Structure formats: structure tokens, C-alpha cells
Length: 75
Ligand SMILES: [Zn+2]
Image (cartoon, rainbow, N blue to C red; front, side):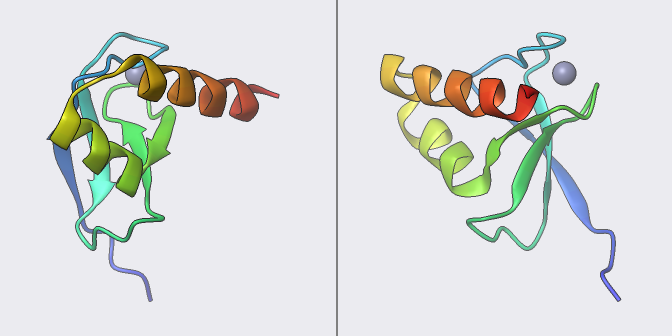
């Protein structure tokens, strides 16, 4: 059984779909956990990528990376 424990985190990047900065992630905080938009449930990135965003803030490189991830998921 997987307990449904999640928490909301704020990230410096806006959701590509709705512009929200609030995201939902599992409390387990595995690096491979998926981070979803809290509003529209869109997949943003993995937790270790979100951690990098929190530590460093959005850089061009990270934004490009997230765009790439988002585009890849789009197909
Ligand atoms: Zn959203």
C-alpha cells in the first residue's frame, strides 16, 4: 500500500500551463519523485530538479531543461 502523503512546495518557476508557483510532491522526497502543479496537476520535473531550483533559483540552463522535460512529456 502506498500512503497518499504529499505536501505543497513553492518553486521559483511558474507552471507552464497555469502560471502557478505552488507544486505538490511526495513527503518521502525521493530524488525521482515527480513534482506536479498543485492547481492543474501538470507534471513539472523530478524532485531532485526541484531541489536544485530551490537552492539556486531559476537559471537559464534550468529553465531550458524544464522546458525540454515539459516538451518531451507533451508528446
Ligand atoms: Zn499548473
